Length: 115
Image (tube, rainbow, N blue to C red; front, side):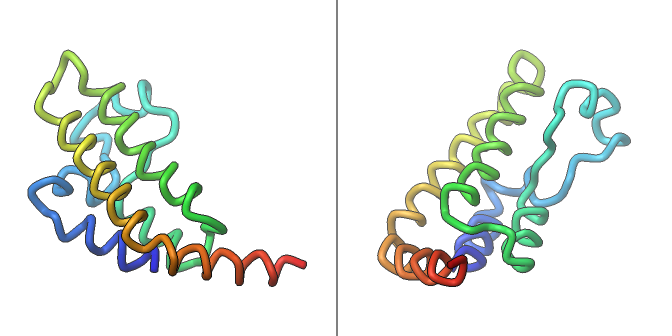
């Protein structure tokens, strides 16, 4: 289910194109001086595929991290970028709501496995 959501976010290319892959030092030499927890959609997809997320909140937090990083690095520098990250988070929240029942059932199954 989370892979379907991240693929959908990646598919909204008009919003996601800047967040598809990790930022490189070549693209932004000072990025890692400012951003201590980099995040991008391919990293999220990899974490979904390796089953690192135990619940939707952890998944959402990583999408939120993209938004946080976009604001922290780009506010006052690249004012067109943070609104794209905000839209990405809004799309994520919408999809999490759309798949609420399926996610609740999947999370219940994960919790049962932990016992």
